[in-house]
Length: 301
Image (cartoon, rainbow, N blue to C red):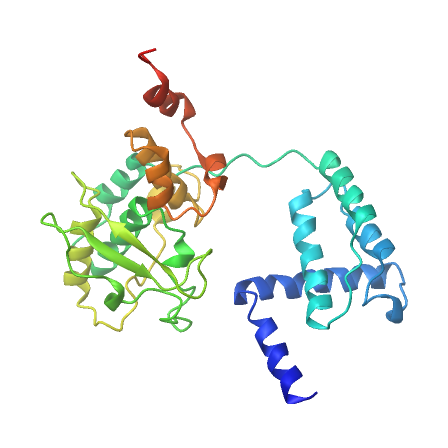
């Protein structure tokens, strides 16, 4: 391969986030496995005809959501882009996807948000004199009030920590208000993979104040500037003892968004604070029966 083509090839690979590429590898394996099952000749697999793309997609009808199947097709499409081959998904495939959407199984219920009551359980049942528990509680309230995805705050393991992806202590700015509120740089977020984004640790009243929690955590753990800002990310042991369901990484983000709406913060401000790049966050709103009256009752018309 000529050097210019090799350089372009490497650049194209960087169009996708590493986590996306990992998922794409699995999806391409699913496509090739389907071809094996249907005894599709190797020469007819890739590049793929529209007929093959349609039959592959239709094989999931009634069992997967159309968005899940679209993600599988995106990996097949990526193979064509990388190899400079025309992707033939066109009109007929679009209609197959519409049919799949109509045949899709019932959607899963929305993920429940983390709530202030759940944070209070942590506060009451963790030993905050313990460096580990201090880190857990700090991580929980920061993720909650900053509406963060946990993947923006933690690596999966200590060994896999990468300061270009996960915040270090040095990414936490000094206090910038009289109350002690601080900016936190997130080196890599879901929508800003390269440049990252900043979020604001706003001073709060009461036990869930993220500013006090950060100060206590840093004092208890004596972290260096280059250390990961948080070392641990799970607190399901406490919540599990109260028969609360296991929480996923996105629940803190949903919970913080919901709480800010419940206390009357305007939706456009919540959107900006939560670094939502579109109005997709509307589908994550919970407690609409409480939120709606805050913005619609006793209107002076």
